[in-house]
Length: 162
Length: 406
Figure 1 (cartoon, rainbow over the protein chains, first blue to last red):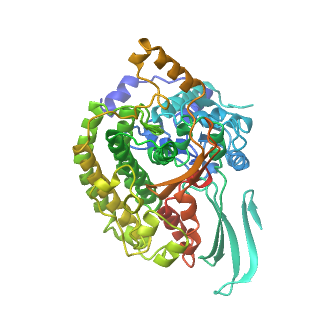
Figure 2 (figure 1 turned 30 degrees about the vertical axis):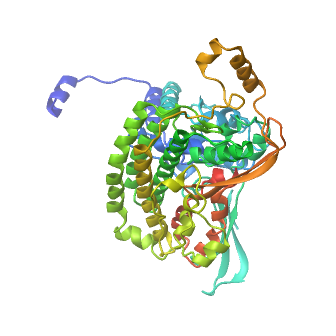
Figure 3 (figure 1 turned 120 degrees about the horizontal axis):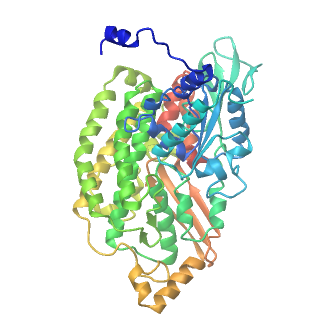
């Protein structure tokens, strides 16, 4: 369809929506993850960015090295007691609105390591939006979690967290 | 002076060669090019590195302690997760240690399958190294190419063991299951295609002027230093010393395979790159030989006290049921003693020291990880280089932080 035909078919029509929906649509399709790899899951996180799965299809290929430019923290791997304050600092540096995906069994619950060294679930220090099971989860699982998160972001209004 | 929370720049008070003071800068643990959560405290004179102090422990998982609470056969699952780029090789070190304590020899087919899995893992580990190192030095497309082949290897892992990364495929007493016909087909196809792919990587990097200027002469590690610092794997072979455990102390029948030990006399990041590329070619050669000479026969030791009986026996034999019950309620016990076994992983000497007190759980398991030992060569390599070269140097050391901290 040419541009002129398109203009003709639209005619004098207007598109109506709410501002909240428009903002949610924009936010949901441009979730920039922080480049924050921890352990095994980070390798599968990298795998989602490669041609076979291409996280760019979901608007999330821009992994930012600075937390100040990112909307999403993917906690990809086990969080040790020593790493926990660092992780919280990174989270605090991210601007609102921000979301967290807890990737893998270790990040969600401590996984197979029920011991002195690991934080038994990253939700003890940051609020988590989506949990992914698996050790490590397949890259497809991460994409699925991202889609779930996108749905949630789109449903949230202009002020996600109050 | 505090720039912001988490970033501190301290003047040490010492005078540098350029008249200014030395600055202490924090590098990591959250930094896109430290391969995980490595933290370095770097003293800078202008832009030159004067001191490097690695701070580790940000990924300390307590794996060694955890293994004391797991039965012998359960421990395999945890070994997967310390050096998470080469799980089957970690399995192999642990399995060989347990087998030596028990005085068990695995059948030839299991040995060949172990070699196949080890070499596939070496390839996939080097591919991750090549992809991420390329990415850090600006060759973004390397990641795309390398992960394409890595995904094929992970597909094979999935075919043979049911899992992409942490296969737990190599176990004390043999391997998890026999190779499926589909796996052998995939392997055949992979061996045929892989040399072409390695040529592709070399076309992109070996004569690339940017890659060469970022790596040649950067991160020098003399052969003497490499020996003194205990470096192993591509780190010591990149300094011209042909030390490879597959040749020096063969295990799993590596003495029967014809391959060369890749070395380079460049002693710099470029040399280590050449060594890894050569190792990938040699790995394909070993895979070819292993696949062509894959013997028939069982893949596990025939010992009902160590491995569960086959499923069909459970329906006819009361004894098999008893063995099955005993194995899955208390496990097997290993004769008292201690043993150290080392295998060559993608990063170097991956050792496993096991102490048994005769019960069904290990008394102590210690991993001698190559990344941890190679990390102490970092300062020697980085001295008097620009701070921007730190990225190339950390990359060429190929440390996996899970392996360092365990």
